[in-house]
Image (cartoon, rainbow, N blue to C red; front, side, top):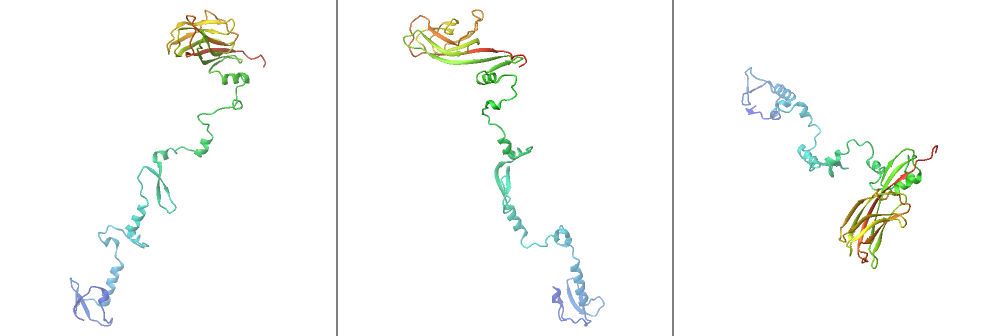
Length: 300
């Protein structure tokens, strides 16, 4: 056998296992046939190389940073790992700060719901839409049948309070004090020195006071008074300016007349000089009043 460097084990050929020639392997991997005792047989060389291959550890590969367990995880890989990872990561891209959903193909998709909005779900204990459907709208109405637990008052009294009164002070045994206001505009008429503002204060109410304002300028100064068309009158103001936005704020004078009017009360406007108005002027009035409601019957 000629001297030859053995590069691969398969290159060792034409060797009879019964041939007792020896191959000496020097430090450079060169072999030569000699008869010295520092030799091994080709058969033994094969066995030693195979034993070395059988005992290779992952720590002997590259820089040794990969463990046998990690190396074994390559088992079953069918194509380039990085290519597969890039394809998966590409399906997971999102801008951040938005909620995502899982699609049928396993990828994710960004939604219009922000992470802040998603956090509002914290503490929800049942279906949101169902809870919303059970709530009333901000603006809504009630029928009489919807009003309960008002046994202290008669249905007629309840209806009256609901339909007209803005303020009430409940007493005992059904007695109470209720307050309200009415508003109206009166317009002057040509060829007449007077006109009426139909505020229609209900009969039997105690008038607290009123506001008056010239909305459209009159052609002359004016006086104002309460008038029920019968015996009840009380002066509110005299010789007021005809100019637009002239205002009168007057409390009812209980010392002048403390009688409770028995008829509906309006406000009468009269020209201060007795001459006729034209038909362009307008005065707005707001009248405030209160009314007492009697106690219920004993044993009722």
